[in-house]
Image (cartoon, rainbow, N blue to C red; front, side, top):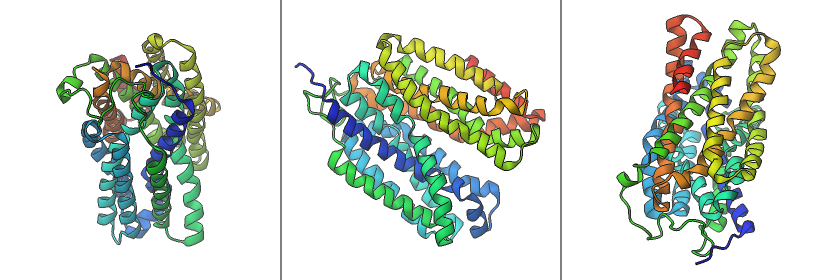
Length: 390
């Protein structure tokens, strides 16, 4: 049967899928936006407050691969609806949490939903867009974390100043997720057989393959490691670059945080430019482009904690964000062809999700170990160099 590409429907689905992922990013980064208020309310130290983020990463890493398996069974749309239900429940529990333990439990539940979320958006894009046209939507939607961060970091202070209660930020996230759930129910649909750009759809009763068969592609595991390197460099940057700027370059807190936030601006520009580049080059050359990106990311990673002066920090942060954001769209555009078969795309996305999530768990720990062991921020170059070389 000849395939029919419907760009209007494809982009509508892409926008709704982007809002779905943005809802999860917004909910994920609630604690950093009100960290001081959390510590004061529950009388906890920074380590305990940081666990509100770590628990999400740990659970999401465990869930990533099973998420792909579940999507193969029930379909991406049903998984999206269930996932948003989990996010809404987790946010409500966080909004009413009377103590730190309940807040932590709500974050663990949210981590379950966050892990499921990873596999949904690329599946819809792969289903609606032909291979040569996937680069732009994959690159634009890869900015979902940046979009979520921008929203919550700017909305949270307003909510806290107006209401005097940080937990109202959780209510805001609940409302955001509820609106997106309505949009998902009405507009997030898999294409018909004629419109589908894949030969088979998970959850549609197509080709039956085992999970192990879906994990046999070496390319899939290569994509996982490429995403791991990307995630590790970003994790080191987000976790320690502001502190490095304060201690080694004598910046004040506000200046250090602003310089670091420039990366997010670079992310959004890089997402759109990366998509335009993928639209211009042949699908056959995507792996070569991925190699180029990994080499560039290796370069910016090795420079991260070796800034020659404060004057280069802002241009460096903008360049880092710009280059970094090109990689996720490339990985997700390669994923359908790297899969053993179209039916195992969910497994492929689950494996990539492991690489995406595990750095959130171990990235901070590895970096801090090298900093403490060798007594300086430049020591963080060692693990970055090892991962990038591999």
